[in-house]
Image (cartoon, rainbow, N blue to C red):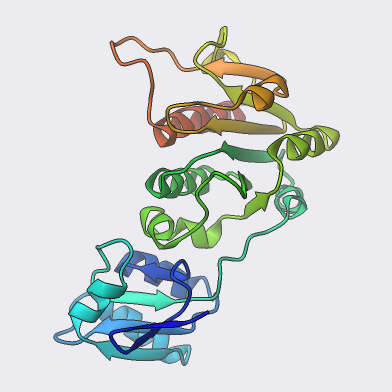
Length: 257
């Protein structure tokens, strides 16, 4: 479905990538782009690289007043460029497992149980991509999907990360177990610290929602639970920070092992 905003035709609102770095990553990923809106005026720095690559790829470039980009923008930080793209291409869980198999590595999966903040999701995707996570699994309901804010916050990492969107997290956990993957949940009441747990095996790490953690049934379906030590008066961490801490412990163990 399309709509017009100040005579600028706009695709479905979630199907846009904003900001210079994010659009550059998109262009370099060779994924489909319907068109790129660029603010009129002097062109400096990376915007010229965006225009050059877009012309090489024969992508339509539309110059518009900056105010029109302000109206279209979801992030309020478009930096003079917005790319309109087809809907995000979610994958199947098997695609994530095949990614690990193709690299001859033990599966390294991240499951997000109800992350609703797009900034958190984007940050987690960025960390996961840099750490070599093979894929991320998110639920279809009561959770944030991939949108322009997620893409911008991920600094383009979303273009390189396999993300599966599933109907039922618990059924997916069972499927992963059937495929030899251990399920590690993060929980503040766990008895084991994350650095004392063996994370070198085929593993799926579960990060819970902001403020609520992982749900009761998901917790019951975990093979083991780990926690991050809290020494201060604040007793919880941002979901993206928690994810980064545990993800990189797994990276460390795998490199040592």
